[in-house]
Image (cartoon, rainbow, N blue to C red; front, top):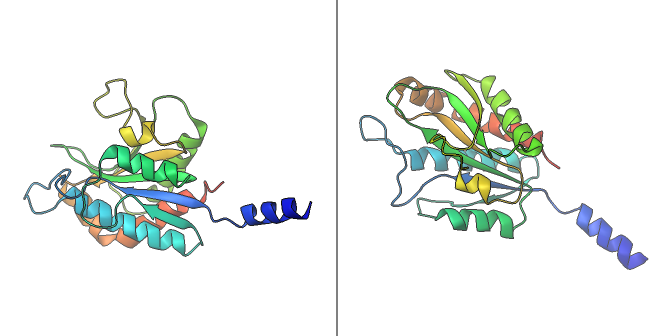
Length: 196
């Protein structure tokens, strides 16, 4: 009985683990700004590190799929989260198009209450900061091909993918640069609302 109690006590004291995925990296620059000088991979990593810093203030164990400008295949990103048994998975990206602006969050196309709650919490917190447009929660992929983003599909915990403004939009870039700390706090606060 004592062994059982000690085991339970140790289990309860384990930290919650959140996996933050900085999209792209290394040879995969992701989207590029219209002047060709700004790369999505860099914005993603900066925000991932800032979110990590905010979460660690709340005694959350954070694992990153990459900590520097390296290329990590999608399968490996999912393996990192699944192997470490992360409680939540959040992937950070930037959008790009000729005319779009604003922030959106993607979840699996198959209805999942935990994914939706995570995405809503993060988007609600971001909407309290200075963003151009709240583009809402979206399911599947932007290609609308009936599939899901790989990291949402193959992670085994509640997950979402944030498109943190359009790198092709000067105003979105300006807002990101001026509100990095606030965005990081907003994403962290949204995550904290979903801690199991």
